[in-house]
Amino acid sequence: EQAGKGEYDHFMLKEIYEQGTSLSQAIEGRIDHEAGDVALESFPPGTFEGIERVQFVACGTSYHAALYGSIAMNCAGVQTSAHLANEYGVSAPPVDEDTLVIAVTQSGETADTLSAMRQAAADGARLLTVTNVVGSTAARLADDTLLIRAGPEIGVAATKTFSSQAVMLLLLAQRVTGDVVGEQRANLEALLEDVSALPETIESVLEDDDSRDLAETYLDSQSFFFIGRGLGFPVALEGALKFKEITYEHAEGFASGELKHGPLALVTPETPVFAIFTGEEDEKVLNNAEEAQTRGAPVIAVCPEGHRALNVADAHLEIPDVDPDLAGLLANVQLQLVSYHAANALGRPIDKPRNLAKSVTVE
Ligand code: G6P
Image 1 (cartoon, helix red, strand yellow):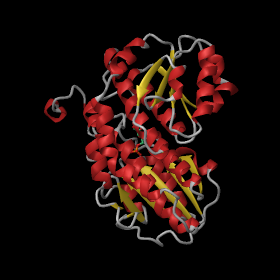
Image 2 (cartoon, protein in one colour):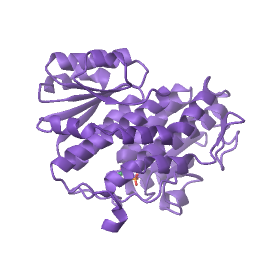
Image 3 (tube, protein in one colour):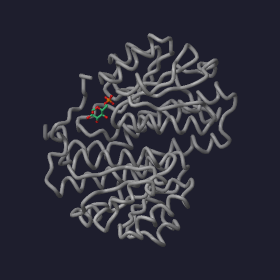
Image 4 (cartoon, helix red, strand yellow):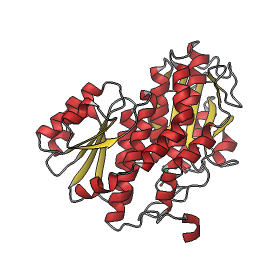
């Protein structure tokens, strides 16, 4: 097992550091810079003509990637919704043959997700899965498969597969938007340039990892809160999930605007707040972070250098300044590192957290 980890103490850390490579594999051959468009092998232009709505189903970290994809598609004008697969039966609006259901599942074997897929198929929806495993049950159930090509992920807490899922969903969103709305987003070429550069951008974040001190500074806190808005919201949820999975400390992710509707009652100097700034509606996130800071909470701003949040923040996790559609993914890498360093300082069994399994095959 040690051999498989190479120079790293844990598979999780190795997989965090593999994200440049796994993302290169995910996007290889899937962007046509000359045409200024995505080039998804099984999904040429016109593939999604006639689709009227898109539903996402997934669990755990894959649900956060699904929410990321759903928000991105929704902002581009496609009617979308994201559902926890285990709540799909009661939460999803009715489907028909004009509905595309996208199941996001690393393993392709999560029972809750497979069950939602079977229900959607029985109701006549078109099924697509975004998965890491060729020939998985999800791939066999779906009409179409988009492989994330991340390579095996051993750590129970998903890391590299999240970033690959989110990026593949962003690329897929461009094709769906083109077909359903009839036009591409305004600055598609610039986004595709930033996606192509993302492996290197992620490497630059990893090279400058200075999150260990920060993780240790706040280690004695009571709870850890993560806030974001828009595409920062699924990242806040994922940041908190990762933190609780491997540190066993209490962590919650909130839509930053929801803090004032309840969670603020929990905020004290013992509850550091990680605030994610994507470059969109940052002023509102900053106001929400300040509301927490006024109640004594330390605020850790996850944002580019020179960002106005740094005038108020108690600490900083730096991310490069990129397209708002991608900023959250860089913030997520910083939060993965914080969780890892906190769990390591606490001596947790990082790769195999208690009570959790890599793939849950019961409902
Ligand atoms: C388990 C794992 C999570 C994972 C979830 C969904 O709960 O511990 O890390 O996100 O299953 O798995 P999937 O394979 O469907 O992405």
